[in-house]
Length: 464
Image 1 (tube, rainbow, N blue to C red):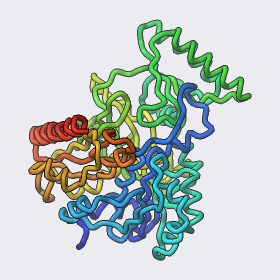
Image 2: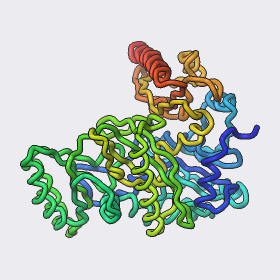
Image 3: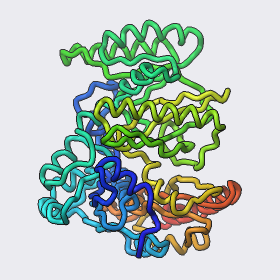
Image 4: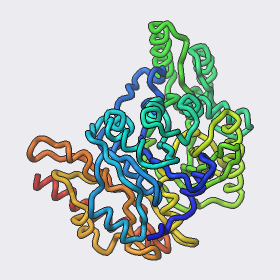
């Protein structure tokens, strides 16, 4: 069957490989920032450890970024009922490779590094294959070396440098892009100067936010509301630097901004330096953690122009520093309608990257989609066919229909599969896009899905 999904896959390959027909091996190594953060000072209280079974099972998103003729490496074989559901929607799927031993605490890349047989299989999978990852660290570079597959990315060093929140602030300053008042603090001396200047904001009753240069998913962020708290953190950073014999800080200090809406937008930077603006979406966050997206974003023409202009200029700046590939920017829409077009730059895929091809196929002009995840608490693995029965009438069944399009099922059962004690339960997540013709229809479907899944969780907790 011919794929329903022309477009982004081909554009991505043309940009990073120079040929839209090149087959890729996709890796969904989510929270690659954990690797970039190794050896970085950051916030004293932060310990960057593995993302856990559910986060690492987000690797299944890569299956729907890949197309027919591509390959994807996964930590676990996808649920057979889920694969049948995707094919029933007309989606041509890639060749799936599954690691021999999946450690819940490891990323799929780390699992692949521990699997010589898989490495051999990838090396022999076909001519012209390239390795395309969620983001590139030294782990992915080593995997590329062992398989002999070239990376469709710049070096890990370039990706890490671009992903730093310090880099984001300095690039925005250089390009004259509006942002919250703040300070990039690469050294303890820069932090000390920033602390003194920031006291004025606290004295005016404003709040500050201290960010780890490589924090991710709501981690590595500290809200500061008093000088006492600011001084305490400052002393901790100084003491740690002195103990380490280093002057590095690796922090960004900013004024806390009251926002109306979080925005996320993406550009693709080609190896030739060409920059394409891909999309902008409303990001749904809770306590700094990503929860989903609304598409299309509800922006005025002027706001859209401001975001687009910033994205293209940032992309050109990234190209000048040797970066190419997908770059995602977080932005803020303020209550007065003004925009801070860059809060941070992500030198990797974003959650919204994995929605683009589905959006092209199932969210046509004038349609609305809400990308989100639903929490579940389970006492035993939940097969997709059982979930399909629970959500009867609510799943998307055809390209022009309305309902939930599931785009990751591995995260439902990832944690529950590790349970050892009878009666125990574990948290899971069901990811998908709720698609409809109107915002009211999407809201109604979302509300009903939430209610039915709550009943599943209720039953698991009480029966277990």
